[in-house]
Image (cartoon, rainbow, N blue to C red; front, top):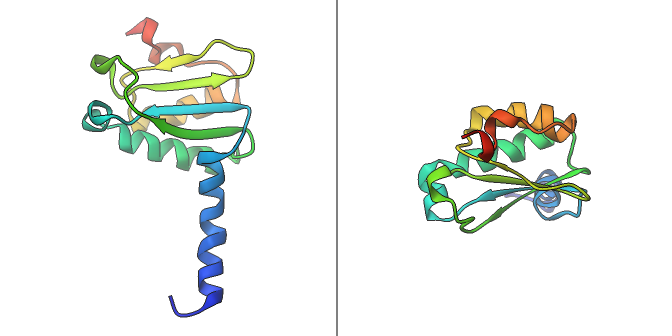
Length: 121
């Protein structure tokens, strides 16, 4: 960094990412990031959700966060979607490639991707 303006530009660039991960949107995407989740590939899944939610302009509606062990290690990476007034949806064996469909169909369209949920695996 060479100037205060450069620091301010970095701050503005990262502001949306921080709001996305700590905000108070109506929908919450929680990625299990305990050792078992990370070993199974949860980090790319978390990063894909952050990127896809931001690029879909859903940062005011959706928060992406992480948590520790969810308790179903055999199904990692696990992602839970919480929405006010609705039952949580648990996605299992997630990959970064599956994230786009979840964002489009569930987070934008309101319909969970049944084939990725715990009841279908």
